[in-house]
Image (cartoon, rainbow, N blue to C red):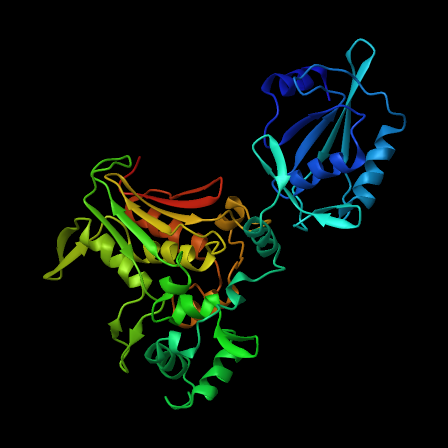
Length: 407
């Protein structure tokens, strides 16, 4: 590390990826800071720096070896840190930068006094993760599937039997128990992970209610879409429309495939149609309406939000916002673990909620190859009006932005 690089870090101060520490820090305190960085996006601890940014220098002998041992025995799973010295940062005073990368094996824990503690980084502070935050870390790692979580009090009567029968017969082309064979239904739903057994009783899973619940909001309050239309280009108290879209994800279909009752995807597209104005032209004597946004690109984006959002984040819905110049779909939760925006554009596949993906694919909502961003959203917008959509990850949300006209 060059003196200039160190000076820049000290001038900017501590933040979500940088911590200042003396080198006489206790081993368990250093492990806490490194674990918090590993559970976020990685970060650096500068050893030999005071809290106010003054350089006090390092005095501990064999400092790199000491830090490496901490990363091996005080952090689970163990990690290998990266070291960078700033020699003579001030005359006779050295600073060691200890860097850990984004952890691929989240969540990481500090081991101390025979106890595991999970820490996260919030701003310039490292603190113990709450139960909900820890749940999200485990889900991001693939070690916990929140959608399989049992819902206490949600028995078979919490399901829309009509939608279940439509799925297992018309959509899947199989057979289903008779309406009165409750146990038969319970066994079937458990086999496909829409129900589970909790305290010797069959209960619905989170995924089961999201897909086929009579009233999903009752058991999963964060299951809907808030749809808003603003008259201008920024959020405002004055709105043209503000609705809460509720109900199961999947529609109820008739034998011929017609939709009898809409699911959330159709409700969302209906909101867009009611709050945008199409242009029309004649084609072969027929009037053809051209909407501000192509239906195929929009449907792919809203389905992605529904099946990939982080349902461990309670108290917030997916946000569908229409502005004068753009449409945005904001999904709660960061991208899972190693997924990046560039990876998505290139066709990287991932699934935070695999059961949701599988069943929505059966209905034809999800690209069978799992590459809807690359194959539908981006080319769909380019063909429609020559614009490329924006994909934005910020804090604990992911946004897809479609432009009405070229910027």
